[in-house]
Image 1 (cartoon, rainbow, N blue to C red):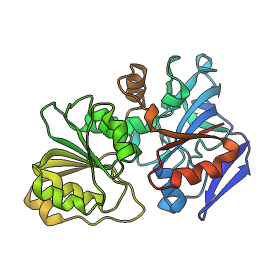
Image 2: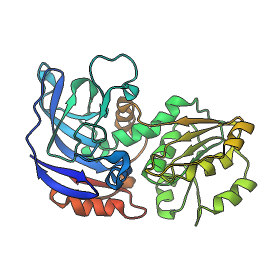
Image 3: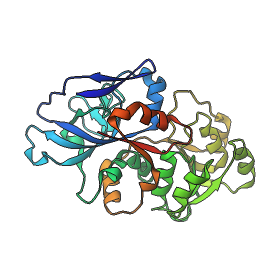
Length: 321
């Protein structure tokens, strides 16, 4: 089978054997994949990664020992895979692999294998170009699962990249006055069409001045993609408020610890979410992800697709197998 292999900043097509599956595993034939900012960070050297990346995907079950009812089904999957017996949240199993990220070949390939228990079947009425957003949408929805978001809270999302857009649109389901702050009018417009309030800045330095003028927020979600974003978020949150950190950068962040302590601010890390919840939201059409799609390429044009995904301000680039 053909696959994409990242190593030392290079992107190469390679030929690999089709994965062999055992009881409790499924062989998936990949249909559609999305290129994520995490993939771009892995390409830059995040985690010292080398291997087959890709974790946003829709696939078809080709083999599933012991579960014939799943054969031919379209599926998405939780990307966290505990190794051995484990009880609790699989996202935090000490001994785990992460599809396309940690010790588990990902979906930038014609086939991959995934534990059966990780699968979520895609309803017939949810097309591939929608279902492929299940993993990143789950990450956006995760904020609402960690924080009791109420309608009267002052909520800000900082950063209008793909994750920031999805998070703001998702939080709009719980709070009618979510404010999304970013640097790109055309991207902010995607959220504005779904009722999210927006504010456009021309330079991140403007945030310091805005934070001195605006009333503070109960909840600030930091999704800037920058190692500096956490301190901007701290500037906007009220004393005893909460900052939810979404950025994973290959560069380290330094925070204003004195402000954190004096203002008694809570910082919550937020990563993956519940794939089943995301699929349910997409099936009910509670929000629209179509505006986030920038381009779609064939797998043979993967390098060109990845180049577009890496361009400044890019939205979601999809690759069809």
